[in-house]
Image 1: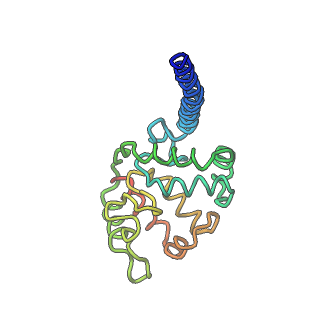
Image 2 (image 1 turned 120 degrees about the vertical axis):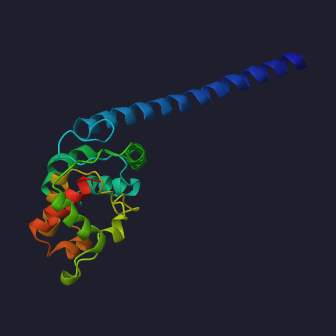
Image 3 (image 1 turned 180 degrees about the vertical axis):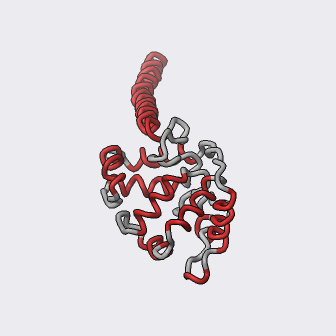
Length: 207
């Protein structure tokens, strides 16, 4: 009787353990399926591995994860309100949870960086000088002081290396005109002219 009672308790415990474990496994599978579906949705514009299909949309591959998280939360909260953010990202980010944002940021951050793009040698040289040394006469500090010597980014400061030249130029222009709210960057680039922006963005695309 004691043995039968012990067997009954053991079987009952195993069944109970199985009942507890199964939903946990299902939940994990559901989260992974949701993550995969979300990545596939993002890939329509940004490419499956973060190498975007159009310069309208930034490359996300090898981007700093904290930067991606911050931007997705800004899109979700509609605090980043430049025209492209409103048109493309407000809706896409509206239903993302903090956990999903973290998973997406990790996924994009570990993808191989986009390949460099060749450009005008004189522009690249001029852009390198601005990025590494700044423009002292105009009070413009070196971009490398925040974005790193190789433009790979640092924490909240994004990776710029290998980004589409057209995308970078557009972002500089919308920040300069205050269509995109970025007070620190606005103060740094407010006096840059278009030729200087063209040079530095051509250099960054070449990295």
